[in-house]
Image (cartoon, rainbow, N blue to C red; front, side):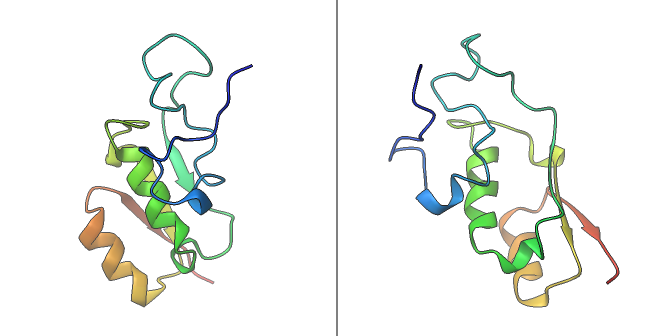
Length: 103
């Protein structure tokens, strides 16, 4: 069985690994091994996603061509509008879909 732990070259934060642990690692993308790449990813049902600083590292990993290579348009972040990081999300990941949830 192969290790699914990301290499230091691809992981920006080891704490972000549990969030994107279902995405294939760089060596497996397109190799025909392991699980296929997910069609989309939604950050929802995990508390306020934007209050978790590791969400930003996970977004970077998931959309990085050398890691999972997902299109940012296939990633959704559900939020109640946590203002401090909403601006950061729009600035750093402008093509990620934002879903506003009323609390």
